[in-house]
Length: 106
Image (cartoon, rainbow, N blue to C red; front, side, top):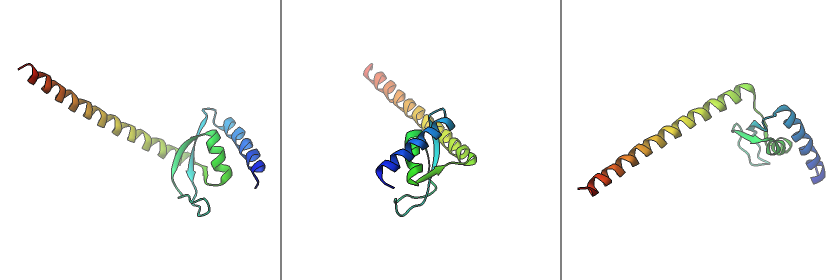
């Protein structure tokens, strides 16, 4: 496929994805490929323009409903862990600052 054909296919795929995913993003799963040096089974969310390119190049496929659900659940869990860690760090910092202020006042 030459550059012009690839560009036309990518544009057509982008238009198709924009109709299918009005939010502008879709979930993809990578496809194992020695040619493109991609590891299969990795899930990602991408804007439709990037998704179109990945799909045309054959490095990814659209995720199934079950894969999307698992991806969203994992993302939500990671978000909870990050928030909990941030709160813990903020509490630690608050404690250290309070201690430093108390020691300064003595």
